Image 1 (cartoon, helix red, strand yellow):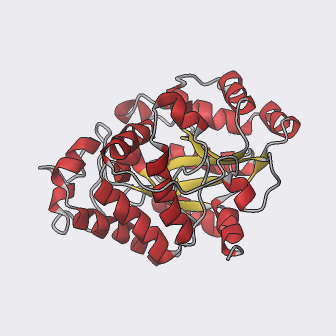
Image 2 (tube, helix red, strand yellow; image 1 turned 90 degrees about the vertical axis):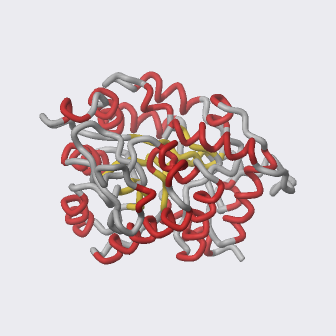
Length: 321
C-alpha cells in the first residue's frame, strides 16, 4: 500500500485546482458520522486475504483471537473459496474487496477474473496480470480496468459475498485519474464504500505532501455520492520488517490525531511455501502477532481508541441526509 501514496501524489500534482470541500478544517469524519469531538476511531484492516492459506489463517485468528476487525479479499487468487467458507460461518465479519490489477510475486501468478482475452491490456505475454503498477498504467485502457473490477465484484456476489467496502491492491487504481474515476464511480453506483483519505491525513503527509484542494474535490464527490470517508490511512506497518511490532505500533497510535484512521495490515501465519514466492514472512507474521497481543488490546483501552468497521461507517453515513 505504500505505493498508494506515491501514485496518489502523482495524481494530485497532475490535477487541476478544485474548490476546497470543507470550510471547517477541524471537523473530522468521525464527527460527521456521529462520534464525539476528539474521538480517535480506528479500523484495523487486513489486506491480501485469499492470497494463500497462511494469509487466511492469520486473518481468521486476528479476527477471532485479536482486535483486527476488517479485511479485503483478492478475488483472482487461489485461496478465496477457503476464506469465504469461514466468512459464511461468521457473516458479521467486515469483508471487502482488495481490487487486484497486478500479480507481483515470483513463482505465484494470477490472471484477470474477466479472462485475458477480455482485457488484453491488463496482462503480460504469459497471460498473467502485470507485475508492476507502471505497466498497468502504460498498457491498460480505463475500460478494461472498469471491466475487470466489475468482474471481481460480480464473482464475489456470485459466491454469496456482499462486500462492505472496496480498496486497491498496490494502489493501482490510484495510479491514473481515469482508473481512480472508475473505482469511485463503481463504489457510488453500487453504494459500496471505497477507501479514500479525505481528512487531516496526518500519516500521509509525513511521507508526501498532498494538495489539500485536490483531495477535497474527490472527497466531496464520494461524500455527496452517499459514501463515508476516513480521515487518514496508516500503511507503513509493512515497512517494519520484524515480528515484534508492539513498540512502533503503540508509538504511532499514541501520536494519532482524532478522526477515523484505517491501519493497513498484512496478517499471515507463514506456511512452508512462503520462501518460494515472497520475502515478507517476518512483517506479515508481525502484523498477525500484534493483532493478537494481549497487551495491545489493553493499550487500546487505556488510550480510549474506539474500533469501527466499514459496515458501521456506511450505516452511520446512511443516516445522514
